Length: 265
Image (tube, rainbow, N blue to C red; front, side, top):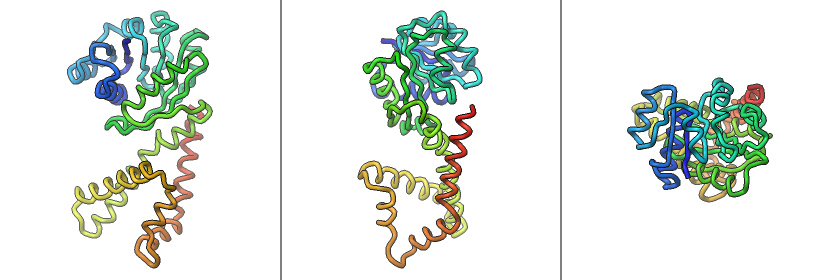
């Protein structure tokens, strides 16, 4: 089985790295093309994959085709590769905001097998979170293959396409909010006298460890918060200030704004 990539930027490269590391595909079975010859050469040299002559060359010679181009180029790229792409090819799209219906119509085939995916930037370090929505033509076996691809660079789950805008809020855009929290927390301890590099390490590791604790124990986040809050202690005082400043409401409003914006793309 062969897999191809159209677009070899950060996310395309992250997926390639994940599937090679997991052993799902060997470098010899991976093909790619990018309009930037420099980018294509960089990915080839790093992972040992094959670089095609152009987009149709890649699309016409693989069993799974990953569309990792910017959404503004979606129509242009799909028009270019439509005739070269077999109806048996599994299309794995990570183009933000481009619906299954949009992709199907762009290919001009009601038989196209399409999985819409929404990964996030932590995929770059193998800790991504990806939502997948297959169309009606994708078999259970093909859905499992898509999940294996997504799980090679993090966690993945199938969701109804109607929830994709919520996914953008939950995992697609939210890393930016987490980075803002880390930066603000680090700023506070820099003010208290800690060197900045050390402050970033303490803040980032705490976020990482807290998330891992929740995922591995399966405990409710409120329960884990209460575990840290000793009666009359320092933590509950900080929680009181966050509640007073509308911390939860601000996060909810931000996520809602993201979902609404996503729906308009």
